[in-house]
Image (cartoon, rainbow, N blue to C red; front, side, top):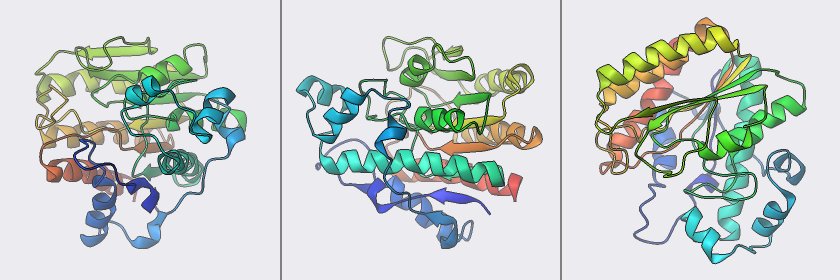
Length: 300
């Protein structure tokens, strides 16, 4: 059975007028359940991440500052959210959800976190709507517990996973791959193990051609025993921040390509949602729901 991490804590409201589309975290499971793609029994609510697990990835000083709300104004500006205890609790829940999904995927080959993909969080700082780096924490958890030895992170959000790249810059057991808008945020890129910077306006044909070459090659060269897939839908042509020209069908084909390689190579995978900032909320929700539908068709 496909297990999906979801919690009302994911939907913590932000001040009126804030551009981050928090509604999608409620609408994605609602739509999937309404259409019969999933059942409510497949949804689970994560607990809060424990501090000692967070410290496998983040500095103790940074974690303590978050816990005590001792966040400098310049850090708050970099994160992009008004900081609060409720927001920190939300981040703890999301990160534990990605760990739980990893454990489920070890048994069932795939699991989803409705949220997650906070790839701009660094060892001792946050930025770009990211406070804790959930994929990095979950990957380090698998290594620490001796559950996996060779992890591949596939980050196809339109923004480079700079925090993830930095955190694992010296970790040979984890290979980071990011295909992102070259001219998009962040202005200063970190070095992933493999970066592909895309020009503004790239279309489905070129995008999928690049990906169709790289993904099978990564599985062949890296021989991963676990995959984290950041499936951001901010690559869509309707996205306010993306600058690419990828259609909804192109986004669907992207998901199919990645997940088919995980399935055929029998490599467990955790999928996190990443970004999505289209003007129409329908575009965001449908593109994300397509990722779930693709997984259901392939794995079950």
